[in-house]
Image: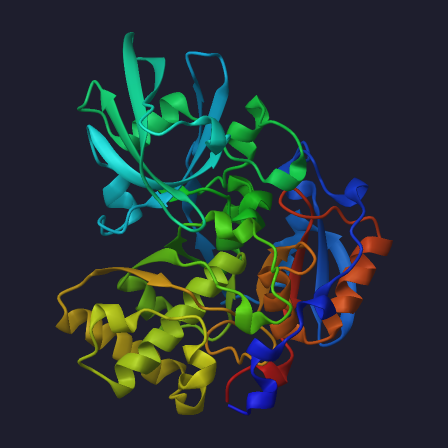
Length: 418
């Protein structure tokens, strides 16, 4: 692509805005679908409430949801001296093939973690925690197995050893609500910081665009002839990380695991109006598009090379676009050739101004932090109109961030691939 349009040259300061703390929703509304819904279409802005969403979607549209479920990733260990060390379990060590496999591990596991109070954790010290599990004592031990530039490798072991790491987290951990809420997690978060359709454990942050859906609203959507599909992208802690580099070329995009069934490809082929619920679902769908483009030009490509790296779409593949149908058929053929009905793979895709959308024709999303990659994604859809959208939301009492209000954004035509 034209290097002057390459998003690596974007200065993040252009995507700043003033967000007063009182506009951040600290708790969810009593009713999920009572939140406000901003509507953006080709420069026009309006609003309604979220439970009216079905009336804003054309029959035959396909909504794609991320069914990842948040795990209780915050573990508090108390030292013998009384000091507390917090361990935030981010993602499994690279030796595990995927998050689901890792969470099903029994007896012991190595996990990448953030540590609160790391300076108090002396070399060789083994932390221990005891909780009740099915009427007996579950004993968990943690030791430092290695250090990385941005996190630690922690070796966990537990007894009884036959239970899974997912069960260990469920019994001993806490839901990791976003740090910008500036509060401890409460009982309400155990239910409300999960989507009603969440089934696949593995995220350390909720795909929050889906928090507005109730089962009744999902039923109404289906009754109107709007189709539903599910993907899985396990959200990492990188979703909270602000962009600290002055230009995007110096920002390292976090990698996330995505999972799809091959049947999803047929649904995507059969629908033109594909609208992801949330930025994670959008990242999944757009990653699949470019994986298909790669498989179209390189039918024998390996699984490792099929992964989407941060800048490769802009550096190479966007000039080789083959169209949605050809892309999806190539990806399906690749999966069949590989004997896969289920694809688990990493993506580092970054969607920012200069990006052209191959799969998605809209987005349901909340309002994001200043100078974040999620705000860049919105700007990729609607250009500088993101400022109009956020100015409107700020001046019309919309609530911001994870527990805040929502928006339905339709992309500008020039940001869609031909």
